[in-house]
Length: 143
Image (cartoon, rainbow, N blue to C red; front, side, top):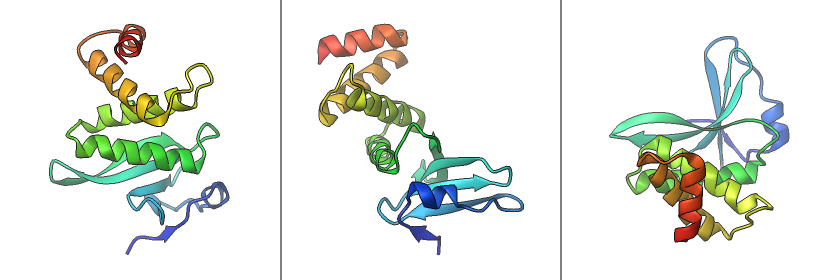
């Protein structure tokens, strides 16, 4: 049974570094979200999912000052929704992080549902070969 607790910034900061390998502490609120700590002391948020029938731990974000734990929970849910919809994990992660940026950015300040829709359009346009700037401009025009 994996360790589960409500993740907080203080709990993440106090996680002990394992002597070898890594250790994952899972969140009690978003069951598939965990914080992985490596033997070198590196900490990252991971999403445990089955992709193509195989269990995988997918990187959500590095533990840093840029995200609160609640923001990481939202990004994890969005990323999981994208994977459920059939998106490749890398595209689902890119769209979730971009949606977070669009939703929280003072320059854009979009509602959550609009930010997620625009982020999906940007990732799709980038997959079709557009640069990030052109993809954003096209997605904002379409929306």
